[in-house]
Length: 350
Image (cartoon, rainbow, N blue to C red):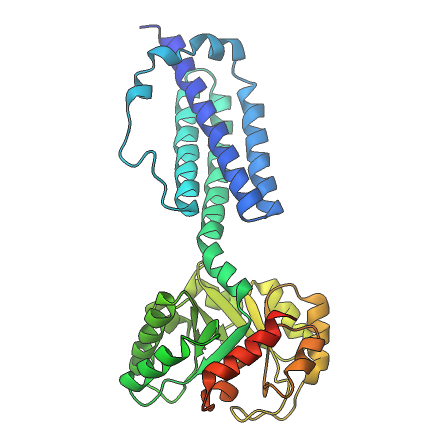
């Protein structure tokens, strides 16, 4: 057996795998996520891999290449040519990159230990970059639904499971995009059970379901996220509980709070109360001025909230908002379908 040639053959094959894997991941960051930062990160990894590869004699790599007699080309694993979705593509590429970097690290020790150390450092960097990219891809469907959401409805837990299920089944057929369960009168156990009912109905309809205040119950119910106020858990602490795959919304009453929510990594914010509301009592109302400020500066989705109905929705839209969160105007209506359709129609053309 020609041991040196075999080692270079392994290195050549593994280098090609890592290059291909990095390119696959870079394209996902660039064209799927439209994320310049992650795309640049993958490009940097690919560039650094090329620099390390220069330390291995290229002629030796090329001379060792013998694709025709590679027994591995005839071996096919189950599922090798099947990918369920974008996340599975990214997961497969990430695994290929990490495994091949480990192979490069181990086999290059025979040639030059300093090269092996560089492969090791690159491997650790790749672990982090790959994990972050995979998580970003996994949250894309939920975040895409959030981006498309214009009408957000806050609902209570009703007096029984049956009543809540009936109400959700009725509301899910309206133009409402996003639901939030908010009911502080219920015990944790009942609230959790209602949340599970809501999640099931919303998910089957392709809509989002959020739990108010309680990140723990949001996770337990497998909800799409949690909404917190200024007196509840900060975004960074809530994120530790709900993880990267769920949404976090934050109630904001001043521009500084909106800025902080965006900096902390909130997925969306609620801005208000804009007008007097029958649902909650406030000492002050922000009016549409806060909406103008937020619309001019904050890029994450923002929902105007507080006393919004068809009589003042145009004022909200003229302030730069085409997303609203409502409660009583739909919940107390004799024809929630028509009210939701009318509001959604105005928001959709804003």
